[in-house]
Length: 632
Image 1: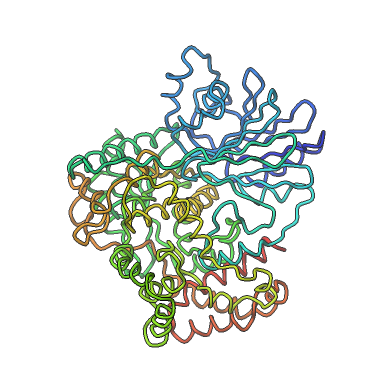
Image 2: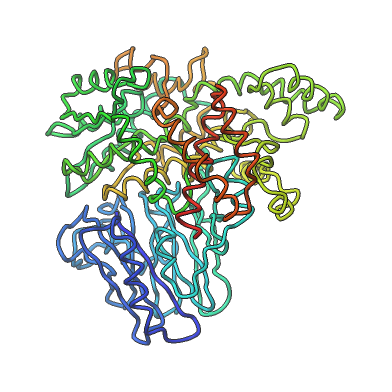
């Protein structure tokens, strides 16, 4: 796991480019504390930088930027899990200078060109300078585990693993992207290519990019989920295939030359990962769990301890105290130069910090299992309401609007209100994790001038993009809401929320985080599984749980799911409201995108006991901190 950066002055030599990339590298030191390197082309127009976190081949032969015999140069962030198989298949007899995956990837590109991407199983973002073709070839992994940001300033194309490194490029200006801010208030994330910075893009997952001497960067998609027809398979066969794919995915992700551990919540997904790790390891697996002092409602350590005892892990706990959250809150924004208003970042930070302090450089997690196998209980509610939603959409517009208005006036703000409002507008029902501001409420906290800037923009446009993409990608002849929910989870929420969160918090503490459930082979299989095997007899994640019954106990598999929550309101509510009260007036003067009266009303609602305002208050607090840090 590493940090990469670079620039190409396409109008000629840039002798100052090496110093610029060195500064960019320094901004990424947390991503790679073990080594650093900068390479410059002979005529000083191309400069590539690398920060190294040594995971495979700890020797100096793994140093980057790495140069092939023909002069191609690579900077690589991530891991190619099947690199040994690729060596045997494509590079027999090739003399290698290192024992890691970077050199194999470089040789594979020399042999196959862009087609090398078809054969990679891993998490990655890399850039290869090809002096013969005079082009820069860039790619990001299928699911989006590793980030890649880029911009063009004057004639200079620049890229980095994090936006903060791009701030070192001469001519940089921190300007907010108005559309991005508008969408962020709904989703608490930003979908590619959009970032909060005007003029800065992020490469979408499963895409590559080619930069040439002239013209804009050319972006192409190289992966779409390979759906398979599985209707002929019995439940038993589906269970066996689920088990085999997850076992294989875990085996791939335990390959390392440094200690490997796991985050363990005691839920189904993390417990399954630990169980497979224990089966495959001769030594006890290091496991890490979190607890909150005096907050039993947020504590699942007893389930983690149960799994630890069952599989004989070397178990570590991190107990968070109220003052630690209070102390961390003003600093959490420093990790996210692209905003991420998610309070769950707090325990993940402390877990990552604990793992690194113990010398555990690689950690596996259970991320992705819920999206692949429909594990969220509220998804079951959406699926149950979809038939009514589709029926409402067919009614005349005046009836749909009347039903929505009446429910808003006399009903409660719940999933049924969402159903009626979205049916009335002719929109898709399920929006993934759109749990922050609705269209009308976010406009109440934005200034009139800002609203005129975005005009009639509606955040449904984000969902509509994915819905159209789903219609193209989904090749099976069925129309089921669960297929759509799983697809949106994989394409939208996982890369831009969960993986982004894990990358930044892991890298902030110089550890590598791996997600076995997001092995693309398992992703393609799970997306292809018929919904009847995902939610069956009212049980979410039915197929996955059935496949693990010989591995995990009944009470672990079938206990009520609890989210990875934080006692933010109990411990941090006063900190948030006090900060907003103290700084809101000056903030709205400095950043006229926001409306003072609208934000103050949100704070007053929380003080009045409206717990629904907690998430919105955290978003406001985070954005105030973020704008002060990154838009000054």
